[in-house]
Amino acid sequence: MPKTALQNALIREKRKNAIMETALKQFALKGIDNISIDDIAQAMHISHGLFYHYFTDKTDLINAIIEKGKETIGKSVSELINNNVGGKDFVEELTKFYLSNIQASDSKAYYIYILLSLNLQKTTSIENNWNISYHPYFVKSIEIEQEKGVFTNLPASELITVYFSALEGLAYSRIKYKKTFALPSVETLLNIFYKKA
Image 1 (cartoon, rainbow, N blue to C red):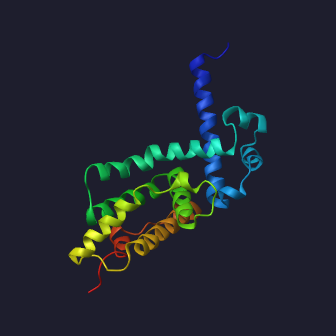
Image 2: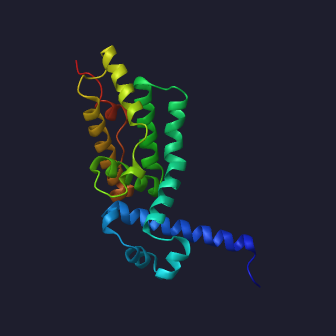
Image 3: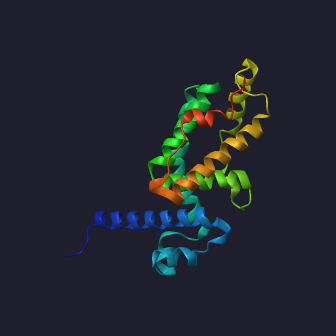
């Protein structure tokens, strides 16, 4: 019996997501510029033709991954900003968000790792698509707490680099060690920002 249009659409969506998931892992572990369509097809055990049935090229695939990640990761950060959560509350909620997502699933850990890696290294030709759009808001939140004397007076951009480097390392450790990996507490990560007595 032939499949219905709905069954075919579900199969197509499942296969497309599997290609995106495989590519995301490959990109995270080896770098976007180091992975070809051939590498993705081999990892999926599919033909190039089947890959091209779902994506026009590598850039199309990358953009699909970005959009899917933005649906989950970017939406939550935007909600914090839209609700006017600022200062140390923003930094704390952002930290909770990242740590819970790193722990939540492999795909979220991979996405966070590659997002932070690309933002820290700025080595890829598609880096603008992955930019952390809330960076200016983050800087302002830090500066608010610095003016109150709560956060250290080191440059906000340096604090953010250290913070994202720590999160990038945690995401990578989660990917690499999965079951034996334990995340630090929110408070431990927040110590990057607080003024020492």
